[in-house]
Amino acid sequence: MTVDNQQDPGPVTVLGAGSWGTALAIHMANAGSEVTLWGNEPDHMERLQQQRCNQQFLSGIAFPDTLKIQADLEQALKSASWILLAIPSYAFRPFLARASALIDKDTAVTWASKGLEEGTGKLLHQVVKEELPQCSKFAVISGPTFAREVAQGMPTAITVASESESLANKISHCLHHGNFRAYTSDDVIGVELGGALKNALAIASGIADGLGFGANARAALITRGLAELMRLGVTMGGRQETFMGLAGMGDLVLTCTDNQSRNRRMGLKLAEGLSKEQIKKDIGQEIEGVRTAREAMQLAKKYQVELPIIEQVYRVLYEGLSPQEAVKYLLERKPTSEIH
Image (cartoon, rainbow, N blue to C red; front, side):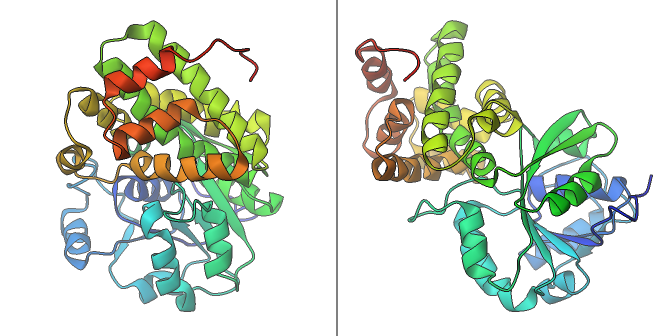
């Protein structure tokens, strides 16, 4: 299968050779796109080239023959018509500052990173616009996705959001292949917030399950967590229907219910009494919900919105509150209308 030339956004460079960036690069190469995968560690990239798989993050999944591996950032960006960032939110601005001079004004900038900027709580599209003022075409990719399942070609659906309908259509067309469905949206704020806040809520779900509270509690937590997400998201300019879709409810259900989620596993381990430092060491990859919980509380304060579940996650992570006490606080809150 090859991409329709009328909709083909051209050669793409995926920036970030972790599990998610690698999975997207594999998928798009299999779909017929011209794909280059770049990573920050030359030794790691050399292993990818030699082994033709990402043994560290996606063991056992071979690269398509057409997938190019590149350790030199300038070379990786030189031939790209569009770029797809798949790097942690904490490294997002530093990377863009480093790469800005190498990114042409006509290059479309997309990202599949999820999170809020550490220290400012800014959404990633705000960071992109500040660091890449020369570029005018942006899009975000989000939704209920585990990297390994995408790389394996298992059924998946995502949302591509952009202020440009034309760009959203082109990127979605590039991604829409085989068992992978891509939908479009113009609600960048809603899609980004859904992808970020669900990580903190997945930690809460892991805590509840780790404490043995059962399926009833998990369902209630996911539903009330969605209410929190919508409450803040609509206040910040997102649309309610976005939070009921793939990038909101879909991603929330995924990360709250399956142990492929690092954030959920963080919650399970917190319930066992382990420290967040030990858990992060054991998991060995970034756990976005840890940082997101802190930034979400700053946004809640700024916009005067209540986020009781995320607040308790924050207190467990940063104030030494035990998971048992956090749950007790939530259960003892005064009854109120569900539509609140």
